[in-house]
Length: 275
Image 1 (cartoon, rainbow, N blue to C red):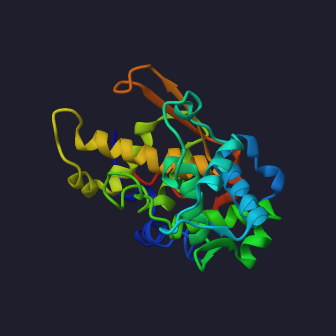
Image 2 (spheres, rainbow, N blue to C red):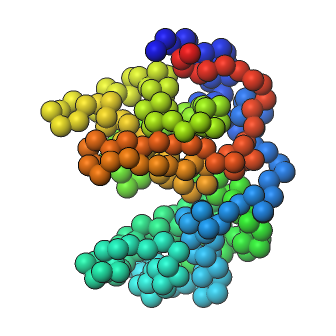
C-alpha cells in the first residue's frame, strides 16, 4: 500500500482530530438532531446496562457504600440479576459476584456515571445528581453525556495492561476514518494500519517477544479499546469473526448506521493515512 502524509488532511485538521475533536474548528461534528428512535437499545447492551444502573441508584438512593467506597454486595448482585449482560462463568457457578470488581459492567458503570456527573458520593453513600435525575428521563441526553465523559474524562487504559495513550489519543481520527471506510466490511488490520501510520511511535511502548510482535500487541489493544469498548458502548460497529483459534482468527468490522447519525464531517477530505 502507498501511504500519503495525512492523505489530504491538513496538519491543523489532524491536530484538532487528535487533541480537540469536539472543538468548533474540528472536522468532526457532533450532530444535534439525534433521535431516541435512532438508538437500538437491544444492540447496545452496555448503554442499556448503564441506564438500568442509574435507575437502580434512583430507586434505592442513597446507596450505602463499603468502607472503601465501593458498591455493596446486594446492589452489585441486583445489577447482574437484570441479565442485561451476563457471564457464563457466573451462570455455571465457576465464579461469584461478591464485590463490585467481580463484575466489570457494574464497576465500569459506577466509575463512568460519577465521572460524567450523573452520580455523586456523599457521606459514603451514592445518589443521583440533578443532572443524573434529568438524563435518565431522556435517552439522547444520557447518550451524549456518556459519550463526552467517556472520550474526554475516562481513562481508556483503566483495567488493562497496555500503554496508556493507545486508541484514546486520536479517537476522533479513528472515528473519522471509520465513518469514511466503514460502509464496507473490512479487516481489523485496515484500521490499525491507519492508526499506526500516524502513531507509529506507540509501537516502541510494546515489548518485542517471540510470542507476539509490538504490532500485534498494539492491534489487540486498539481492538479492545476502540472497537470492543468505545464502539460497542455507543453502538457504532458490528463485528464478524472467522476462525476458532484465538491466535489466528480474523475480525471483520463494519460501521452501523448510528455512527453517521451521531457524527458528521464538515468537509469531504481524503484518506487520512493511505491511498
